[in-house]
Image 1 (spheres, rainbow, N blue to C red):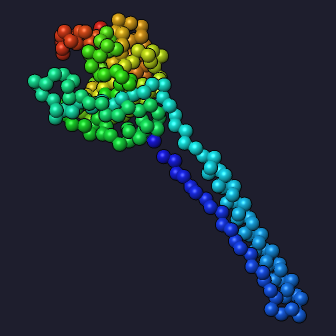
Image 2: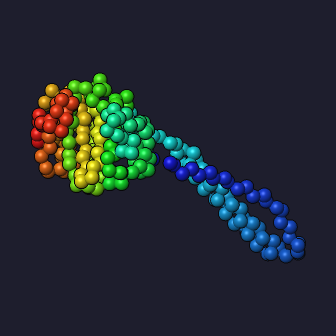
Image 3: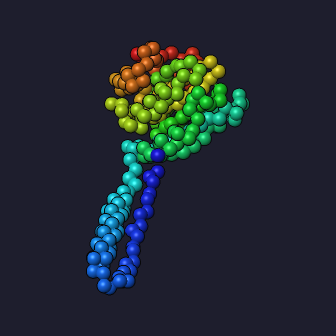
Length: 240
């Protein structure tokens, strides 16, 4: 997300005196005077255009479009994971952005989900919120999850990011962030929220998310507390 800058310089022409080599020819002298006036007129017009264009260029200034919140991209490298490692220990903050231009500059230069290695997790969370159950903001929250065939989540991942950073949700303050997880046979996008017990807010977020993505399958909401206790056996508390 760069403006092209121009630097116009007006040229200055030095006028030379034109002497008539034949002082006895009055008609020829008048013709030379007419040619001289036309030549000066062209130069004058050119200078005027250059000055006007230069003023317009100087008036153009870089004005970034700030987002309501700052956001951080996180990457959990699959090659750094191991069964012995503590969950989340291989997760690293990549970059924090707070303007529309910064977002597009980053998004256009990073791998989309379909290009990530199997086992990778790519997160986008509000600044200072870590994508972990242990984070104080996330501790009492939960997540909605969408499932896709392998290589089919790119567009929905982009639309999820745009809806989040563009504050499109009615209960946007409840949202912590989103993560896309790439696995061998499928990809999942999860939307993390703060207060899992606030059913009204969670149902609203889930319904709007499906509408933004035009997603027709049923989705479920799992409390982080249940996920910690039961792992993959955790049941959906809400469904849409």
